[in-house]
Image 1 (cartoon, rainbow, N blue to C red):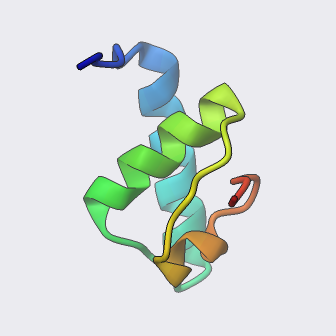
Image 2: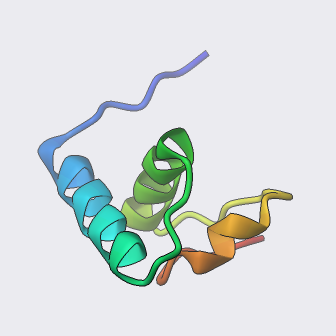
Length: 62
């Protein structure tokens, strides 16, 4: 199993996404927000069945 590091940039991406989603009135669960931040930062597509990820601008969904 590999663990991804949590660099400062990821925390900034997380904060930006959290603020944007709250302002839009569409917050998502905190743990999912961290997943979205990592995927967005690394430009990775996210394979999920959770529709709330569609609220995250810039997140590629597979």
